[in-house]
Image 1: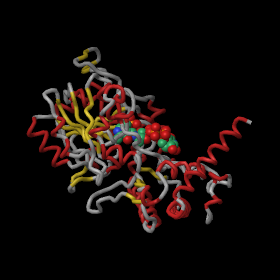
Image 2 (image 1 turned 135 degrees about the vertical axis):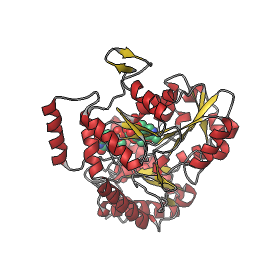
Image 3 (image 1 turned 90 degrees about the vertical axis):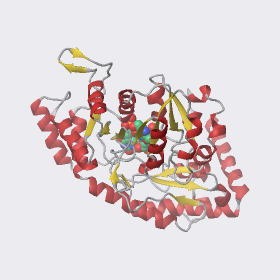
Image 4 (image 1 turned 90 degrees about the horizontal axis):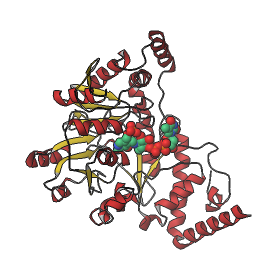
Amino acid sequence: MKTEISDLAIFGKPPAFNEKLHVGRPYIGNRERLMERMNAMLDARWLTNRGPFVTEFERKICEITGAKHAVAVCNATIGLEIAIRAANLQGEVIIPSFTFIATAHALQWQGITPVFCDIDPKTHNIDPNKVEALITPKTSGIIGVHVWGRPCDIKALTEICERYNLKLLFDAAHAFGCSYEGTMIGNFGSAEVFSFHGTKFINTFEGGAIVTNEDTLAIKARLMKNFGFVDYDQVVYLGTNGKMDEASAIMGLTSLESMDEFVAINCRNYYHYRQALAHIPGIELISYNEAEHNNYQYIIVEVDEKVTGVTRDQLVEILHAENILARRYFYPGCHQMEPYRSYFPHAGLLLQETEKLASRVMSLPTGPVISTEDIDTICQIISLVVSWGRENRSDLSSQLSNWAGMQARLAHV
Ligand code: T4K
């Protein structure tokens, strides 16, 4: 156990963990079932294109969400692109900048301008009160993002879209298994897009799904993900190859069978962090609405450097040296990344909450390979750094930069 600041790996001591602790270690589920299904797929020699496992996976997603249609796709980014086209979005679309870059790219990739809206600092989601000011004659829709699986203010966004005759989509990459006012995510807007990437709690290696209650949108999306083919040799839409393959669906089906167990592990980790971080001033763990279904996939903390005496970036650097690979999701915000940074160099002026949050937030390791003892060690290091930071504000920065300088000089020897 590290009890003195000089025990930290950043000052040359051995790291707290021999192996790196990641934020997104995948859940695997029952390997025997996985291999059984893989063998069945190989025996059937049906690997992709309308295979039985993809069909079953789509049916299971509909069962769990209660939505009418699920169109499985090769990843959520392509899923968003297809949903955007199927919903006929054009011109400008309002999205938060505090999201993974895929939300913005899915629009820009098809010549649609993402217009970045600021967030509500309490929810980390798009602030509906700031949406209306961004609507122009070119605006065709809004894409809300359920960041960390915590739903956006769906009611307010729906009301705005109805009033201005805009389409509403949701990037639900984080929100599989979550609910809003008792209804599962997957049932809101024209469509919602889940990610089943390896880092999500239900994974299909790479994958995603467009989920909708609109028949026409579902038909279009299904055609578009298969080049627009309606028949062996008839193409009716511009399409792409967005198909999920059978091996991915097998991983997804096997994951879904263990979904309750995965949520229970995430939930255990979350509450353990909650209790271990509770006494550390300036470190605030996000909360989940207990009245809803949550997947607890993300352990997100905000670092208030005025209180901690240590910045989020210094803390991340210290944790990385201990092999605790905390991540700065979603720093620095999409508007600060290319090509948006060059297109909209002054966007930050309207995105003050986004910029504030992006400089404070960090994601801590969780998932199947993190034990409660690991969590205690992580939190104990954070606690040590914060109490030292509070007492020796200027010293910590100068010690870190001296150490960095020394390392740079050593690298040149
Ligand atoms: N919208 C939102 C709001 C999203 O967050 C995302 C994706 C999307 C849309 C698009 O969904 P997809 O098109 O990906 O389906 C990761 C994921 O790649 C990305 O899916 C996710 N969001 C984003 C939040 O995180 P990176 O670049 O940070 O991934 P990477 O490779 O650094 O992995 C994260 C951590 O997980 C690492 O510490 C290593 C660990 N890891 C990762 C993989 C892939 C493993 O332990 N095993 C693995 O197999 O983006």
